[in-house]
Length: 169
Image 1 (cartoon, one colour):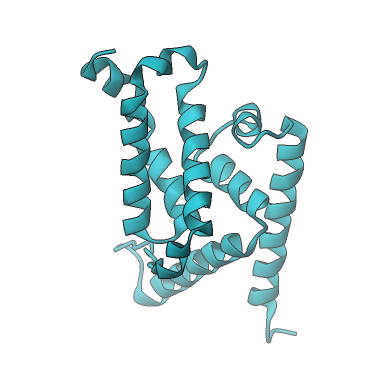
Image 2 (cartoon, one colour):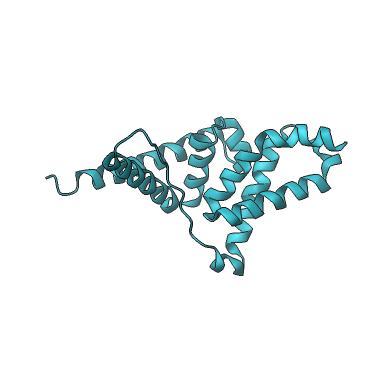
């Protein structure tokens, strides 16, 4: 496989790989390093890529495994927490603060979910994979993916409702 064929095959999902790595590792720098490491591994094994039915699913699985290994390693204690907040210049300052707080709260709630639910919500709601693809990546049945996603969404919804209702009763 030549360089252009390789790039055509793996570049379309580069941003998805990065977002998954960032969701798992939190740090932008660590996520960039993980993305670079994954693409280096893909390049080294470029001749084997044609044997995979879904290269994107394979790459996402590799990303998940690499990030989980990083988190388990001793270097995980050195990871820094960096939050990127959504900004909209067309809203007033108060609304912008509320939006930023809500987004930050959702990110915190996702981070508190069990690992499997966190992965499923990232892959389905953020990366827009279908249930079968997620099941393939996480070695789960599509029905188990639906259940995990439903439970994760329910937890986030309930905790957001608790926060917004606090002090109103």
